[in-house]
Figure (cartoon, rainbow, N blue to C red):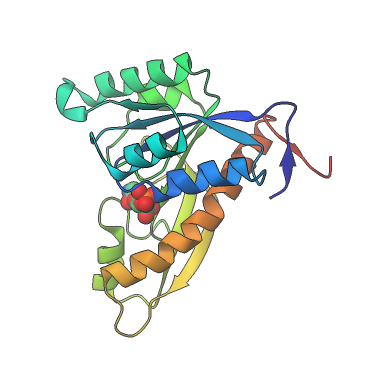
Length: 204
Ligand code: GAR
């Protein structure tokens, strides 16, 4: 989605794992496909792939290990503080494998976007790709949506369908779903920002 801004939209990203969606967002911004800049990554798993990618890409990365916090609220309060310090305007959960609380949602109202590897509302929660295979669906996919307290339950921004092929296992299906996530997540961020007036359409 073509979009322009007076200055780049300041993004924060949360990740727990390999970080391919995080890197794809950074690349989309740097190529000018998204009028934004990833100002801050936060990871909860020290040394995870996302952290390594941030170090290679020169994106500031904070490590907030959930094991060191008393509660989900305490972790989310630290996330809010980190993103506020970086003057972040919109936050993307790109493979964030922790349940978030109202503390984070209230700090970024309609400014918190999640990517999930299923066609919601089917297969919420963890291991969505495995759930889809177990259910025997012929069509899966991914969903970018705004975050609400109900896990994977917020308003849908964009979805992409991915057929389940004969002989697919979790790894092969997840790989094809990832390709679609990389396509829709930058567009969903632009859509969320356009709705809030944080970006303008290139067409005016
Ligand atoms: C993505 O497939 C994302 O949809 C999923 O984690 C993966 C992270 O990949 N998120 C969830 O399952 C959240 N419930 P990445 O680290 O390569 O971006």
